[in-house]
Structures are given as structure tokens and as C-alpha cells.
Image (cartoon, rainbow, N blue to C red; front, side, top):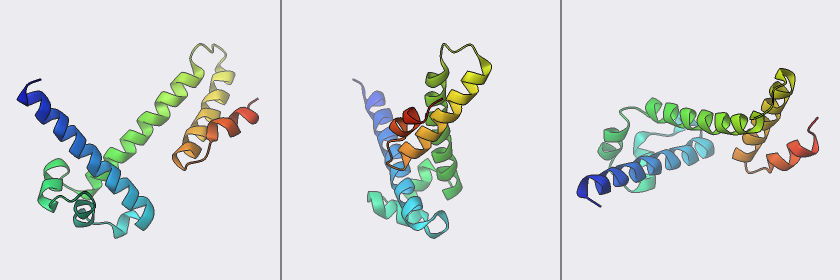
Length: 118
């Protein structure tokens, strides 16, 4: 493995660490009460280092939102794969989106949604 690959892997790891710390802080304290400095403190980096990955706190928020939508879309796509009936696809996608939302909160949404599936 070359230096370039290692550098890219390190950048990805740090970026993900920033997102993970921000997510935890946003949930615990609320978006408006979290600063870039607080995120930097959480991962033991300088605020300047955080700004090299995300110029504004909003950019972190939007990256987290995009990540959440990707998780939701992947779950829904898997739940409706191979189903031809449009109504059944719609119903299954709704059930899957509920399960994904619950799962992000630590609730076994898959089990609950299977129990109540049509």
C-alpha cells in the first residue's frame, strides 16, 4: 500500500470521526448548542483541522443528512426488490422506512414492522 492510499484512508477515518462525534453531540445537546470547537474537542483535534474537512457546521449537518438518506434508501430498495405490484411496493417501502427510523433510535424496528406487516 502506498502513501497516497494510506493518506486517503486516514482522511476518510478522520472525516467519519468528525461525523460520528457531531451526530452524538447533535443528538445529546441539540444542533444549535454544538459548535465546531465542541466537535473538535470531542475527537481531540483542533478546530482548524475540522474546518479543513467541513467549512461550516451546516456542511456537517448536510453530510449527516445525506448519510441518513442513503441508509434509508438502501433499506427501502432491498425491501421492495422483486415486488412488481406498485401498491405492495409502496406498503413495503413505508414499513421499511419505519423500521430504519426506529433502528437509528436503538429500537428493533425490523422485528416490530414484521409483526405488523400486511
